[in-house]
Image (cartoon, rainbow, N blue to C red; front, side, top):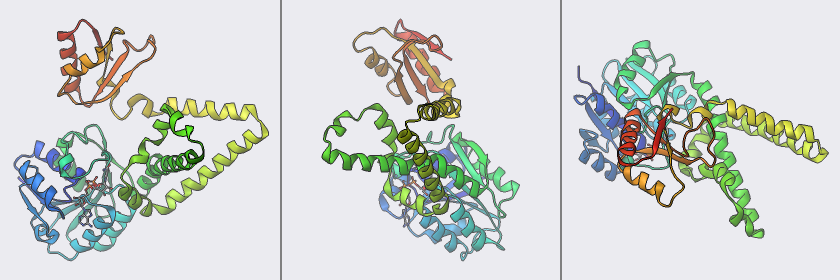
Length: 367
Ligand code: NAD
């Protein structure tokens, strides 16, 4: 039976979800709320949604499923508002916030005792882009879409959400909200703090040591890439996961002190172990195998060391969305060719293989 879905917040995440839902459920009616007219207009014009409003409460009673895709503070405010509205019996409310405990706690407090189902969610995909203009139907492909079930979540809630979101092609995962916040504090929130601290430290240092700007190269770039993230979103993430993040900061200070002491003592063995352990740990980590996408979507091209070769291949792939391109500096036995191109899905990979083999003499290998 066709459903009515209400997406509040037609930003990058909300509008991309609308596209993903439409892909598998073209018969569902999608209603959209957005504060600014620009994203409402784009979402309507591009057919992402069927109807739009700037009055959040007006569409809520019409929906079978409501997804709040707003900043965390606004998500919390709307959950409180929903508690006082006359909603459809058995409505599902979900969200997209990057931290979960604060949102789930408010939902549990305000929605309990009503004919409302709730499940917190965090689609772990995104970018620095914002607004409906940046929407991408493939944004969530192969990404973890995390659900944080609580007492207002029944098994059928999760089944209905997964069926609704099938067109996102994401990987659904369930985890407790507090554990979600602990894990993301370590692998996402704290690294953002570190990247920004390192960037600020370097900027101040460079005032007196001008060459610091010029010498900064690959390692520094990799360490600080995420310092370019959107400040508003990261402020709200830190403020809604305070204790857990403070705990990570304290833990890290101790680690810095420890390596500082080893350096001051000149303890060669300890310093070597410090680097070696981290190297082994990183090599064993999943990130090494996947780099955000499945390694099976990688293609290797054996290219000659000639001018414009890479440009020629990229020209052939115009219109195919690739997620990464890497030139292997040395030809190792286990990596064929030197140009490695990563794709988001198997179709793009196949298309690229076909295009390159049809139009060039280069050997293409897929592992
Ligand atoms: P966005 O800036 O693209 O969109 C945010 C939306 O919220 C916009 O529609 C904006 O109009 C609306 N909004 C902002 N303040 C509002 C207010 N006070 N009242 C009413 N509406 C308001 O951001 P996004 O990336 O789509 O993020 C939405 C949610 O998804 C956030 O909770 C974010 O933490 C979460 N999230 C973001 C990412 C990412 O990388 N972008 C990844 C996962 C989860």
